[in-house]
Image (cartoon, rainbow, N blue to C red):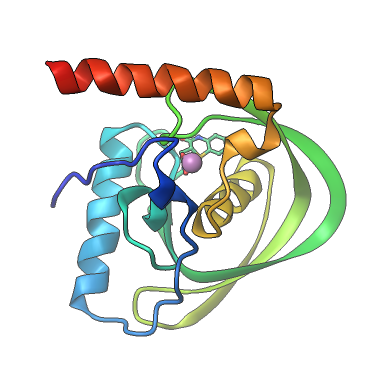
Length: 170
Ligand code: GNR
Ligand code: NI
């Protein structure tokens, strides 16, 4: 398994819209496994392929403390079951040190395919529902900073650009 490099804001590649997965082969399984490994290493609860510069509609999620329930979600489509907006306070591996409150639908139904291409569905609310909505935002090129003020967005942008300069000098 390989640890993949996670793109950080304001990398323009985070703005690309991901393409549907059409072939369910060994290379797709390898991508999913590498993404799970990377998510576990970086202590995330979800990771979208876009974040590791793979522009395909592929997401991994594991909400468990002991990292025992990996969920691989391909070609996700969701439908809102309860339109009530809840405020979710979120972080993102692509925007280190940044937190943002985001309005999310309370209850969704997700349709997706598994690694073999089989169609599946699930109903989610709470953290799982928020995480799914966060990851689908990534596949569409949308980021947490898009929910914040331009002042806050520019501040985090300058901060992350500066920390990248420091790394490049070392
Ligand atoms: O690790 C993560 N935590 C999180 C918390 C609340 C809502 C969404 C998330 S996803 C995030 C990992 C990440 O950046 N996924 O894209
Ligand atoms: Ni994220």
